[in-house]
View 1 (cartoon, rainbow, N blue to C red):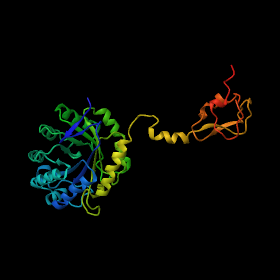
View 2: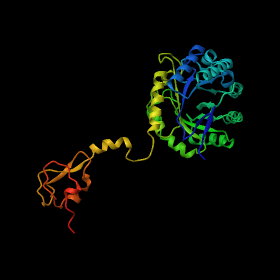
View 3: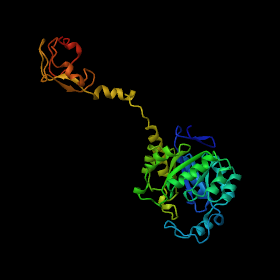
View 4: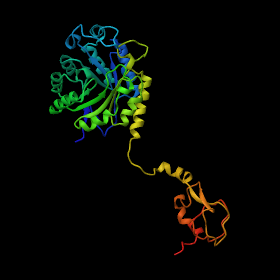
Length: 347
């Protein structure tokens, strides 16, 4: 069976167009005007969905949790300042519906997931930090919505455990290849993992959550089979914040979407002479021509025949069938040969 997700009527599967998620994260810094502008620009750029994050800091962490180098202040304090309220998420979801783009959200605790459920979120995105939190994931699975789970910072065994737990719950599932570095060095991205995930997790749609500051690895991920691409976005790349270094702006998002659509259109596996190639083929291929005058009755030797464009005469790969035949008529130099110019081969 081919894995698939139905997210508010948008089917995501290996047979459907790549699903592009603009990850707004907390790059709005709690400003609803900025958040709305991100929604509008994500729609204009052609993304399928824009994703926010629902943080209840006291539900998800201790105040003195250690911080990584992408934070300039403790995460707990950052979220206390900038996290959106449930009412603000409700307003953003309504605005997404007005604009015509899917609203997605990441809950960072069970309570956050419960709250998002009350506003009718159509799917849950699970961050890499929560991927091994099986008790919470199973509770979220019970809410009956598709789940998209990032797999950064995780071993194969940990992903196996999460996959098996969620597949047993029969939740529509996607797993995203991810490297949780901000930003990653390219040698750590390991895009070849995508193909291994496709083979290993046959009950899940496989995608790629990209933390590089440019577009190249996202295009490559699509070529390697990723059916979901998630990319952080920001209104102004000069704005400080924990996700600034891994975010693209909305002009780049438009380039990403355009490039993905072109790449996926180019991924067919049929080798044939296409209709639009035929007119090129007629002049670009080589045919056999005379290299000097040839008299009627003369046997054509290798010195009398070679290949030139166009490809409308005897194909050059049939030269050995021409060498050794007699000319039916006088032939000037530098003309296309035809089979009518030649006597039948000697018996």
